[in-house]
Length: 300
Image (tube, rainbow, N blue to C red; front, side):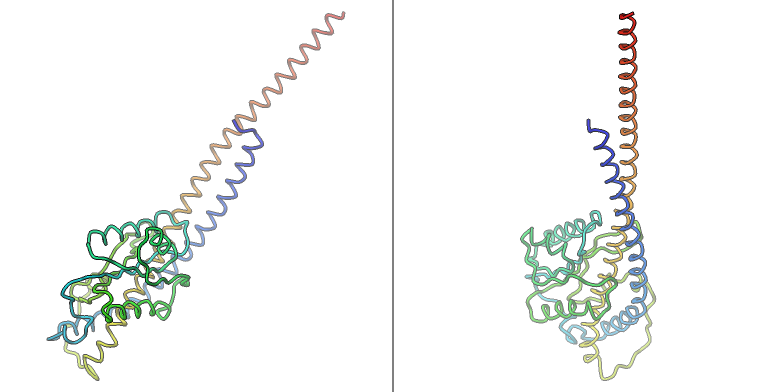
């Protein structure tokens, strides 16, 4: 059984740890609110881009308009953009998305290469000896579209060069503060009528009026499709960041509660040990007094 001094030091260290986890919970709560706000601010632009892209995709001969709209005859290699976090202390956030991605790619039965966003995903894939062709880490909190645009450019270039035949994005979708789900969605070849990336936008009514495009549909596709692909990646990163901060906030709250429960249990044990020590001291004093009284009585 540990001594009273050891128990006192342990209680003090756990209280200090609880203060740290409480501070991390507060920081994550602030960051998740900003991440949700940033995600909401991208929706008007995404809705209009979705509406224009769907209208273009319904035009005759859409597969010949742009190579990003044309299917490959046979997928020989996939590219997966895996979005994780740079830091830990977020519960099972990173483990869940990496495991979900690897299982899905194994079932897809096509060799895959990875582009990682976040150091945790990169490190986990390297430990599993998965091919990582590029990695992006150190993204700021609530990054701008321009910060994430190089990821979309890399993905589009790899597809147009013929290095990969399909592109997927794997990230954790933010649903609520207590619920985040790992999802894998198809980016390329682009199929607007089947792409479930923005369910909220898809559920909205799309205008059926006829548009006039200048200089023309082909020129617009060259600009809109790569930008829309980058926009999907950007929205996925924003959703993943909101999920990360929410998961970290919940994990730190649970850690704080567990630390408080542990301190309470240790405090009870400490009080029992202290009471036992005091009782033993009293017994020693009482026994000494009785022995002294007996010794004095024998002298008399």
